[in-house]
Length: 185
Image (cartoon, rainbow, N blue to C red; front, side, top):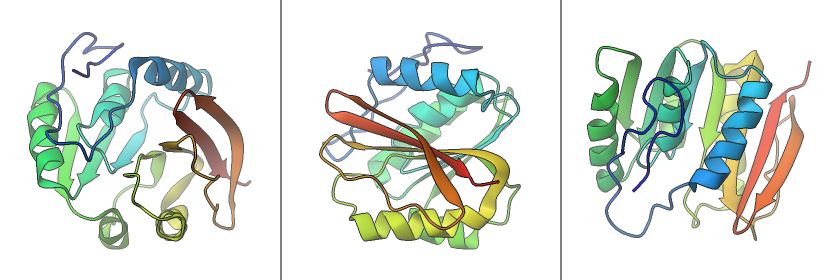
């Protein structure tokens, strides 16, 4: 079972997503990722969007560590149910909005604050062109100091970054790869 590993909600267990379509981020990967994000000062006060959120573990971890708000998005019904349950842990302590929607559709309709921290952990079956379209749609919504985190299977190629977004870090952890990118300034 996933848990919050640090911050104000440290140790709280998160409801898991039923079925096999969602792959949770391991604690080891989460610890490394969030250590790096905190080193970049990418979390404190951030507007966070977590696409393909699953249980919400990444976005909720960011909230626990000081992010200002979270928009958690997933289309799958089991993930949506887990997101609702897990977001309730933050009731009264943080601004959390849970959306049952396709990532691309959500981004096209979104009219919120500029995104300061964007998580994309799409399912295996999402094609590289589909991921590229989502990244291209998100790019104009990014804050100038935003961080974009893409998590994929270790066999996946590097995402195709839209114009104006550049890769600044890549790391493989066993069967998981992380890419971190930012707007080019």
